[in-house]
Amino acid sequence: MYPFDAQPVTRIIIHPSIGSALRMPLALDDYLVLQELLRQEQDRKERVSIERQRLQQAMYNLKELKEQYRRERCRRIQRCLEAFQRQALIRQAQEEAVYRQRIAAAIEQQRADDMWNKYQQHRVQNDTKSISDEQGFRNYRADQLGELLKIAFGQQSERLRGISGKDKGEQEEEEEEEEEKDNKAMQDVWNYVTRQEQQMEDSASPSSTADDARAETQETPRAAFLAPEHEYLEDKRTNKSPNKDLSALHDNVLPLRTLVDELVTVPADVQHKDESLPDNDTAEQEALTPTPMFRPEQIIAEAEPTPTQERDVSIDDMDTSKAEKLAALRDIQQQLDEIQERNEAVILGSSLKFQAPEKPGPLTLPASTKNNRAYLGYEDEIMRVLLKLDAIDSGGDHNVRELRK
Image 1 (cartoon, rainbow, N blue to C red):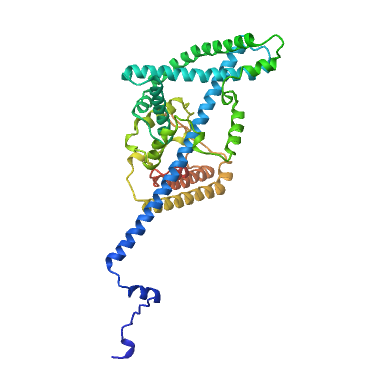
Image 2: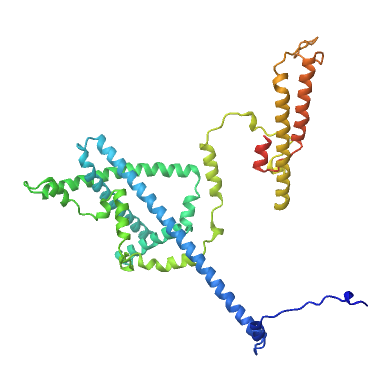
């Protein structure tokens, strides 16, 4: 056998450091232990990253809920102002700021009274008379804040899911009841503002100025008197303070730290989400959407089946088939443009000779003249190209369907 017929030799080059590691008196279990240690560390890093993302999402959701509440409060304030203006209760434009402060304080007082009344109803229903009012109200408010935190983390309690799962008729009835409650609450707001004015008049001396009287009425917290733009500036000033400690939190919020840690660590249970909500939202959106005008290009030909009649294909086959269909459609478009550019100016500008039928009916275009034959040939060319178009199936793809139209 000749030397060049010998089989090639494969050489394995081991780095000196690796060779020295292999000479260590280590067993296979030692390598497995180190591998398991690195895997656990990797899993821990991934969990920390996921928890950080969930916490950021929860902070964003809570910020959106806060902004929604501010907008709703501004809407109610503006509605009360408009009602008072209709009753000629505001005589000068400069008084609007004062009324806004008083109405904001009245609304906040109403919210506190409503929560206390709901707590009393909850106490009677659950028979918790053995607990003191202060402790029971603190627990009830903590439960309400806990539900708000669950909403911020994308979770809902059974009660909220039952409320959101109601049909459209029940929701409209509740909206009407809410509007009636708002009308009744408006009178309460006015009574509160009137009492504040009366107290200001009784406490003010004859020599006191309007500024002193206005300063005496500011009994509610300053945050309740701020307009939305003032609240935004106040938040910016507050965030700049270097002392951001837990001491700034309210006592009722501190027990919720355990719930926050649990919501950050445990992902939301997607199995308990109500599947009927998207259908209700879609039906409501379709009912509110006006019916579009008829357009001929919206017709789907019989040669193009609907997506429900199409077979399932893999992603690779779908991409390849889509590219071929788009290329074929562009070729057809080019052919139609060439036919139009070559014949349209001459043929469509010529005169045609029609033949009347023996029986009543539509006119026919015979191939008796040169112009008629040219027009019929032009029509045949278009039909041959359109037959190629009918052979292309969109497969439910939006881009292919639009280009096919």
